[in-house]
Image (spheres, helix red, strand yellow):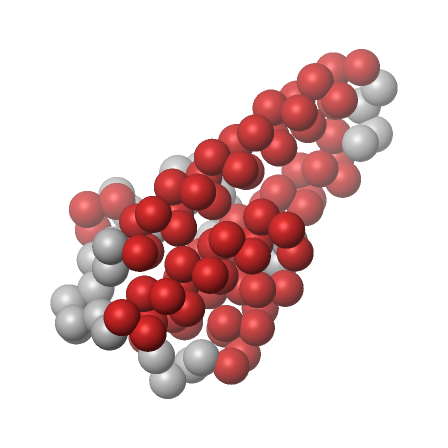
Length: 114
C-alpha cells in the first residue's frame, strides 16, 4: 500500500487531529503506550484509531529491532543509533502529517496489528 492509497475520506475534526498528533509525539517518549491507549480508548474516532494503530505498529517494530540489535556487539550499537534517529525523524514527520489531517504510513514497518 502506497502513501497515496492511505487516505481518509471523512472530514477530520480539530480534536481528532490534536489527539493523533499527540499520539505520535508521545510515542517518542513512551514507546508503544500512546498507540495502545489510542487504539483502546478512541475506537469511535476513526482518524485517531488508525493513527494509534500505525504508531503501535511502528513502536513494536522499533522495540523488536532494538532487542535484536542489542545482541550484536559493535555493529548493533551503530545500527541502533541510526534506528533511534530514524525513529525520531519518522515520529516528527507523522506528527506533522496528522496535524494537517493526513494519516501517515511508516515506510518500512511490518503491519503486525491489522
